[in-house]
Amino acid sequence: MKTAKQAVEKEVKTVKKAVTKKAAPAKAAAKKAADNLSKLPGVGPATAKKLAEAGITSFKQVANPSAADKKKLEAFAKTKGFADWTAKAKELI
Image (cartoon, rainbow, N blue to C red; front, side):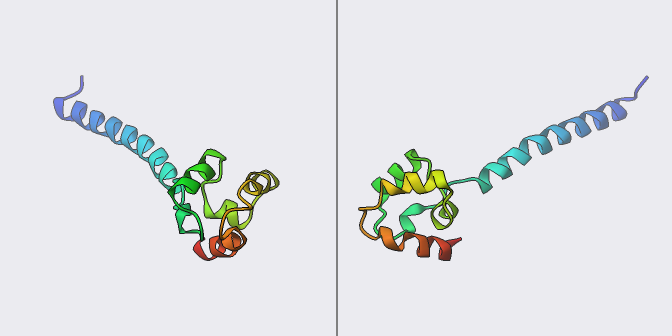
């Protein structure tokens, strides 16, 4: 039979494991949090929202876009300051 102290120690270990497992995804989610794209020239809250809806959420996607991201970004080509987005995004990475 386990003593009360052993039972409590076992429960503490179980809780610590559960907390650690839940904390890891939270840290990963924090790293994946969207960048503030309104720091790009000509991008205000409305354009940032449209970029997010198109799947563009990070400076990395603007600085070094994949073929799919390039296609998404083409929709914003007429946005004021668009020509400077890549350079500014590279600065902000």
